[in-house]
Image 1 (spheres, rainbow, N blue to C red):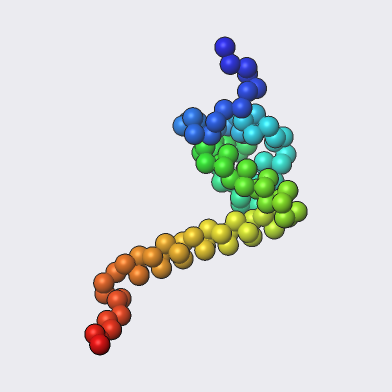
Image 2: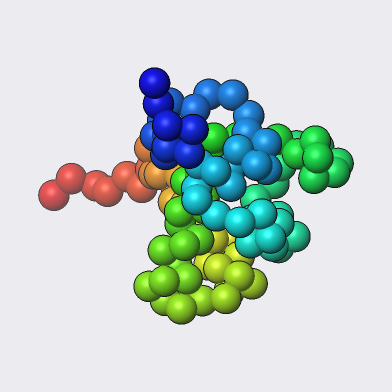
Length: 112
């Protein structure tokens, strides 16, 4: 029988997590996760902490936040800025790739 506090691989979690579930899975305290919600890094569904539900992707986000804090020594607002810029950069790259593959925007060069 699995241990109650055993870590569960994020890829195996398919149902939304409560705040307590997320704390247990990530091995963190609720206060730190609440800070991430207040800063807009995590976006649970629900209006109050008792009914918050987090998608399993929140586990990946929490791990990114931990790495940024550990490796770059960023505070939580700094992490929020970095994650926002990374998301914007990824969106721009996707858009550029779409435009580069769209024949309407191709630049035709005359043959020599």
